[in-house]
Amino acid sequence: MAAPSVVTERERKYELAAGSGIPRLVGVAGVVAQDDPVEHILDASYYDTETFRLARSGITLRRRAGGPDAGWHLKLPVSADERQEIQLPLGGEPHKVPGRLRRLVRAYTLGEKLKPVAHLRTDRFAHRLAGADGRTIATLTDDHVTGEAGGPAAHLDEWRELELELDPATEPGRLGEFDRALAESGAAASKWPSKLRRLIGDRVPAPRRAAKKPTAGDVVLASLREHYDRLRRADVGVRLDVDDSVHQLRVATRKLRSTLRAFGSIVDKDESAPIVAELKWLGRQLAPARDSEVTEERLREQLGGVPSELVFGPLSQFLTRHFAREAEEGRTRAMAALTGKRYLELLRALDAVLEEPPLTARARKPAKAGLRKPVRKAARKLSRAEAATRGLTDGELEQALHDVRKKAKQARYAADTVKPVYGRKMRAWRKNVKAVQQTLGAHQDTVVGRDVLHHLAIAGHGEGQNTFTFGMLHARDAHRAEQLRERFAGEWRRLRKGKAPGWLR
Image (cartoon, rainbow, N blue to C red):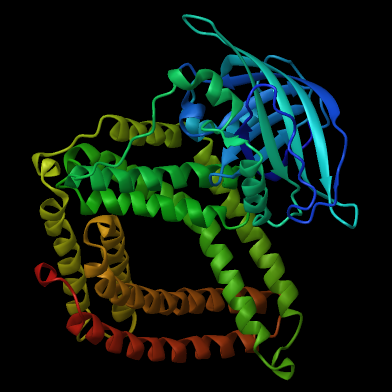
């Protein structure tokens, strides 16, 4: 089967009163021509798990015959108006979801079987909206839909709706212009994000609403759910080999782990400890792929700043060979983790914690009272880590500063979690913590960079390369590390003396 194609879909749906004609959109958003309708008969079967795990996350998976884009379509939400659509051509067994798509949604289905949950037949009349140059700006479709959903009791429905979909090359901002024109013509925005949700809406649990007076548990769980959603979305990106997706997956993993650890007095730490350990394992599996990306980018930037007369030999080609091997090994390790049973069990454990959270008595406290202690504890851990650096030199100092960086990151994540509660009161302190974290992150890059340069010099020498340039870059990194330690000292003073809530001291 061909590799999947990925497109970005930007559209809005509208209701039309019975007997209403199609709105004319000439003169709106650069449209100079509205073509006569082209009719398509679309026949689509939708797939989900028994408990609608995909629909609950705003995802649709269908097999559609008819129309210009017949095939398998997996739609992932990006925003209210935007979706990422992954397409595969028709082929294979018509009633079996292709393995590629099953694997892409594994983080959502958690291994549960995908089966047909609904069938839709659409008589579509599509109007192309073109600009002065003849290019398509958008497509307005008049859909007459008949739907049937299975289950304990079959559900049948018929309706008519409009869709306004921008061409991928059209600026997203034009969607608002079309929206205003359609509203003026009598079209009303649909409350349903998709045809499938309209048909099965009463069978999918409504999204959780934020409490007017949240408890400490409400705030922490909202943060965990956000990180879990980001992890699952990044999981899809890694499987599609999307740029920066390994980084996003690693960040989501780190934030989940940090939040569970920092707020162990809210979400019972004894219950969550096994998950924290497994998140640490996952982070280690992702680390080589991400570290290789960061190191290569940084070294190439450094090499690009060296005068040509100080670059001896084909060092760029040497780096390409070296990091190609590193990247392949890192991706292989990451994919082995994502396809294994251990990762699936971790996802199931995370899902269970969010569905039936093991909250403590402190979690029932009002958020402002219940969340101070965990944040204060994270701040104190950071202060103790900084104090432990005093009097150290060389490798011991570098390791201690790396620990300060990790504690700063944990403190920042804790501040992010409680932002909905304390907001502006935490802003200055969080900003200063972030500055410390970033400076020490740059410092750690020099530590790793020097180690890699030492390795490259040895390997290059073995291949007959002139490794003078690597030695020069090594010396520059050592000097840069000294500068960053001086910057850190100043930033730490600002953090210690800067504005912060009194209870954080």
